[in-house]
Image (cartoon, rainbow, N blue to C red):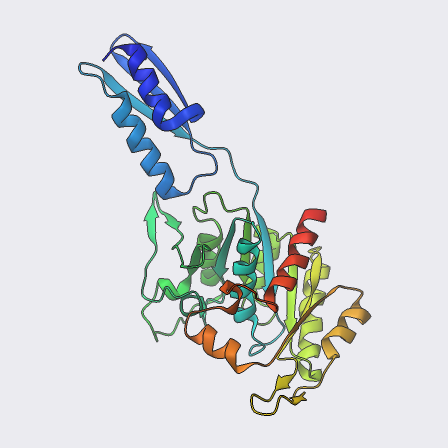
Length: 314
């Protein structure tokens, strides 16, 4: 095989991504892997190395990549038990189905639940050069969670600096071509939230609340934290909003109705919509089958569309 044939062979597997230079008995190839995840990068490098091999020549392959402009959407609540993790998983999936290259970070260090929601329980992430590689999920949304790094049922008894360090490892992982990172924050306004707004700087925050007054009090605290930190609020979602009896169809409101919408109006932020108190959402999520992955989803897709429109406008 001649030197010209080497260049043609490399072009055949890498197209315009590769530049070949031959000097003496050395073949140097520079490969642009911008936008590829770790698996695709490794496969491309191996293919290029094989294509460039020529008896009697030394082959050197250098892989480069431009930094992907990645935007973080923080999903937060002032208290636990409002369905924030379920919303985060479904929002990430709905954004991915709408065309955004979306990843999901489970930043609830003490109570990670995303591995179950995303049907990847028991699958540990790999690392390359001490950088974590997100785990692929059945829904096209790569995931990283502390739940993938510790044994099931094991308590994580860490102080603030350790949780901040763990968050950094998850967010600063090798997310490849991901352009939107949904971060499921723990409840409250503590160390993880402060680290997120100070170090990782979300593009915006989605606040989740249930309709009752006690939940709204805590949601207002979460809104206040982000506003004081200069992080824009994308909007507020009212979860567990209305229960439809599966037998008679009558709708009741055990937690009240409209409280989150009124709170959003009072705070001057967008109201993104309601998620009903529906046993089908709960059972599907517990089974690792998020409703947003189903064709015809009418609950989470409209919320994701508003988030995507906000990102496009800002």
